[in-house]
Image (cartoon, rainbow, N blue to C red; front, side, top):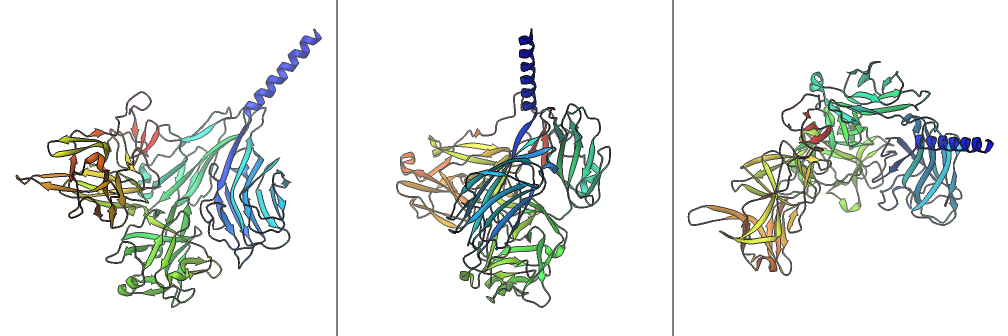
Length: 635
């Protein structure tokens, strides 16, 4: 009997331990930099804010080793990266492991350490030494709550470079003896909501998300991180106060059975001041040049040779709110060029650079601005505006935080980010009387608007038709059931009625993505595309028969014998191997297009419920964001 009881107690204890292990959850959150950090960073999953401090100057971002502090001329002793408290983002979060990817560039002593709250974590891997280290991943373990401090410190002398690429944090949530509950904010269709943007003029019809949870707790505590934007009462009702961004949170305390649980979403209220990061330059549109997420170039600073700034801006992720008309700029092209730009300020003056060190000049003379143009290179988090004058000496338009101003510097200051007015973030594409056009954007994802069909061609399906050789096409047309987008770097043929269409620029593709095909080749700038050995090049054109009828298709450029094709900016041509076409001069579009967008069928994706963001049920999809069967779909 005693043996039986011992065995029974052992099994019960083991079961309890197993159940406890299943209830406690380990999760990871990672901070990885992809561009210069500007002294901060935000983790990918929880959105934890990190602050970067150093006695050195931040240098250009290194794609291999990450953020980079120190130079040959200005060495560095330390780089510290400090997080906010993880438990404020995830209830009951206890940090158990931190993995740091770091590098340095000098053969002198250094230490790498991690502290969580007041607890020093122990390490496995390289943390000390006196030789240069590159791409080292060091793991630190422990158990603590609070702020995380990652420190890379030289102990003997300064070094020309300290790098940090990523920090991965593993944390456990909740009491292992209790069950973990779940919680979420949901829209009217039941879809989970993590962020919501509402226009100020649509507030009366707006429906805000509701909070739900699986805990047996009956009291929900609501909060808003920025009550100048919105408040939330004890019943979960949101009241909008002003423009900006706030985090709305619902929280349920732990009970005897369940761990505490919470969920939050980011609410942004926008007026006519909503901007998004520019992925391409669209001439003639409204922009804002913002540094460190809070300083925007405005006008000339009095009579001085540098630019003034406004702080009436706020940045959240890839979006910005600009509440100062003086911070709204216009960027246009120099006549006759596609890659030379002028920057026109709100007061009508142009910003330019004469070559005088650490300055920025201003003029009302458009001819002078055209002569002293800018080249602009957009790179995530590090946009480069290079003046034409003395550009070989490395001057860039930057923000100087030490002597607050915008000017051109050769040294490393704060590189600004270019934002475009959200309502301006589209490209105009013309389809002529032919009913066809080619399209290519190397750096922009585009949404296909209503009334336009995107076509791809099949180089392996060329047949003999009534008008000679025909090439098969596949059609991608947006409908009430599906959005269609074109990924950057994809060349397509467009079909539609004559007119000019607006193609919204997307941060990410959505819906059905038109596939890239190797035989369609595009260019962002006007260029002559060479066919290459054994190939022929065909441009989009038409021929007229004896009855005056025009037949669209692909044709050799005049005088080219198929060896090259002349294209305008953002256009594409067809390149085919001679074995496929046997030297024919033209190919028309085959009859009977294959559709590349399937109708939405099947019980999992059948369209039965469509709502707008305000929760109103729709009979069909409308332009913008729709909720289809609980999923957000951009149409």
